Structure formats: structure tokens, C-alpha cells
Length: 397
Ligand SMILES: [Zn+2]
Image (tube, rainbow, N blue to C red; front, side, top):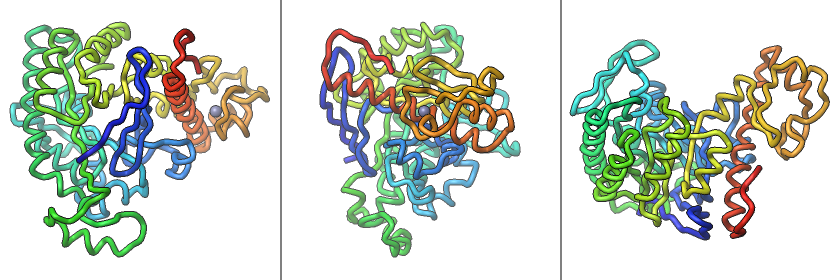
């Protein structure tokens, strides 16, 4: 068994559930902060725990280049390496490689690309992307897909979708043969007791050995199909035929208008099985993640809260605040009076503005903590709204 998904309540199309992973339970709908290089920039793991983060996302492409999968594998997998005992998800690297427009070449076999760091040549195939993700050892890993560019004509969108479907099947085949090689599946009880390191080396091929709660990683399939609802429907149906414990909607937020994103998300959701987690990749403002959760999305990730925080852009119950503005220079009020995060409880807008204007490291830390709290609180509000089963009022945070 990989992950288990239990739906606790529904309200309209929305669902509140529990995703049970080898590293703990995740309450859904959930927002997953992005820890690109096994780190949420500026925020330590103990603070993430305090914020109530139950699952983090890390990027395969970046970890593949630095520190490399062998290093992470030797350190016992990402959980042990970064000292994070809660759930993790890795993307396949497909989206990052896709964004290296001038540095990549796509073929049937996979994608040849050059590192954005030093120009060194690399190759990711469906098999390699899964092999790397098994070595990294996240609880949920993603099929290697081609993210169709926007705009794309009908012929191109179909060809890209067909390629993703062939790659998806190859990912699943490789995963089924190698899923017991995940670092934490090699030992009995993981965790911090020590003495486990020795076991790691020798138990590698011992498939009879018990692993974390008897579970393995879960491989999710990704629906593509560009901006064509008919292709999305076909992609969903054929990905479901291949069979996965969860399904993602990929290929969005690639430059299309927001309204089109929404239309494609809603039309794709209809075709995904209701008993499996649905993951919308790389989307959203706070308003959007609330709306998508209400529409039936269970999992979302986005760099927006963390990236915006580093640029002094903060999400609050009163709208966006650009903390760099001079008008906050002597503003004694909390960043967001309605927020109960450790930043809003302690510091003034004036101080946050000063930190940002002075380029202090603490500015990035505090801004990121608040924005993450805001996103997580947004999801908790939607979840409470679903569980409460109210019928008239809409969700606000
Ligand atoms: Zn706050």
C-alpha cells in the first residue's frame, strides 16, 4: 500500500479528507509549501512544524543537480537528510526542465538539458525521473510529464498529451519494479533512534523486510492536454486507465489567462475519480486556492507565498501589503490585525518595513512565516467550512 485517502465530509464539490502517508497524516484540502532545495527558504523545519505544515514539496530537478540523488540516498532519503519526519512530495522535474526553454531537447526517450548552474549536460527520462524520486524518498512522487507550452495549437497539444501518456506508462512500470528501493523502506522502524544507518546498506534488496507502517511511496499520474477540455478529458480517462492512487492536474499557470486556468481546472476535475486525491500543481493566490478547494481540489502547491514574501509582498485579511512602501515607516499596527501568526503577534509594520528596506535577512524570514501562515490558515478555513457543512455563506479568511 502507498497512501490511503479517506473523505470525512463533502460540501457541494468540496471534500475534507485525510491523506495517510508513510510519514503521517495530512488533512485535506491542503496547501503544500515549496522547499525547492529541501528547504523552505528562510524558514527552519521546527518553525514549519509550529505553523502546522503537514506536507512539503521539494523539487527533483534542483536536488538532482545539488546535492545529487546519491548523496541524499546515502543520508537515508530526504526526510532524514533535512530532518523532516512529516510527509514530503517531489515533483518529477518535468516542469523545471520545461522552463529551461533554450537549454533542453525533448525526444521520445526523454529530455536532454543543460544545468542552469554550470551548463553541464544531463538527461531525464521517465525511468530516470522515477529512479531519482525513489532515491530522494518522498512519500508522494510524480510521473514525468511534458508540460505543454501555451499557446499550443490542437495538433501540438495532442502530440504532447500522447507523449505524456506514453511516459506515464513507463513511469508506472519502472515504479512497480523498483518501489521497494526507497531508502526508508529498507529498515524496520525509522526515526531518530540511530543504528539504522547500518541496516540501510544491507537491507536494500530484502523485499520481505517490513517498511514504514507497511507502506511504500505513492506515484501520482498527471493529466495534461493543454487548454482543450476535450483533450483534458481524454488525458484524464487514459491516465486513470493506467491507474494511480492519486491524480494531478498539470500544465497550468504557464502564461494563460486566469479565467482559462479556472475553466480547465473545473472541466478536468469532473473527470477525476472522487475517491482519489486530486492535486492541482503550481496554482494560486489565496483567493484561488480557496476557490479550487471549494471546487474539489485536495492538494495544491505554489511558490507564490514564499517568493512574494522575499519581495516584500504580503497577503493579509485586508488585501495585499507591499511592506516596502514609505507609508508603513512609522506604522505601529500589526501587519495583519486578524492574523495570529508569531510575526503579527509581535512585530509592527514599521519594523517589518525597516527590515525590508535595510535588506536584513530577518525580513525574508518573518515575511515568509506570515505568508505561509496565511496560506495554511486559508486552507484550514476552507476545511472547517466543509466539515461544518454550512450551505449559504462563502469562505473568507
Ligand atoms: Zn501574520
